[in-house]
Image (cartoon, rainbow, N blue to C red; front, side, top):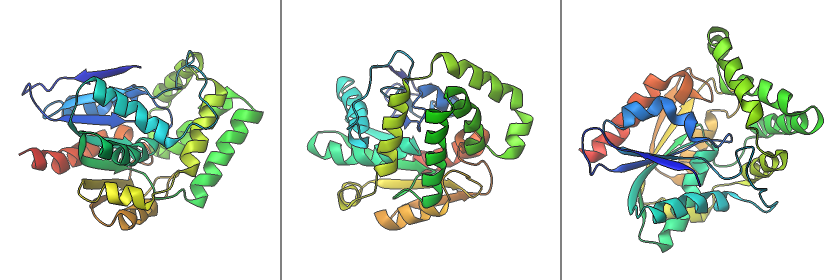
Length: 266
């Protein structure tokens, strides 16, 4: 189980923020947030199960609850009793499931931030994932990797950072997880829905939503739907940045995170 806790640079006993990435599952996704968040918090990042080339096979029944159980185990191992949780897409719904699981423990979520998430998968997103599954199963890993940027980044960002993107793609070949693991995780994601149990578990938790109007993968209206489903929270809509705005517009996203969370700390 791979995870790391970055210490706060200003205070030893600072509150903890847990960062949970999307379908890729890698802790490195959050690199643009570490320096900013550690000014105020301890920051825990982790690699999700089944997301590396040497990963064990995930069972076909693997679910969002299994993903939430992984981070719950980490929190219990580290004896963390309270934390903020920030999740991107899949990582965000893991946070919603974690809120349900911690009800039977002495752990509590101070806040949950959803970045480009949903209450239930939109038909457009469903079609995007079906296309990705078809590519992976019928064309192969390279096609799957090469197309990802189109779902994650704005066109102008791709044009400006094409070499960096290609370098990341090339490095992804050697560490690509077992194909079945990718399919199992996608299936879990596609079947997740916000249920009354999530609404109840988050009723007393501060909730924040960040969505991008130019997100090609998850329509920003799904964050509006998610807020309606949960019944409370603060929604911030960004004009640009696309699905991976924590990468493409990291300065803006970091500022929003600090504005939302540091006010609670102070």
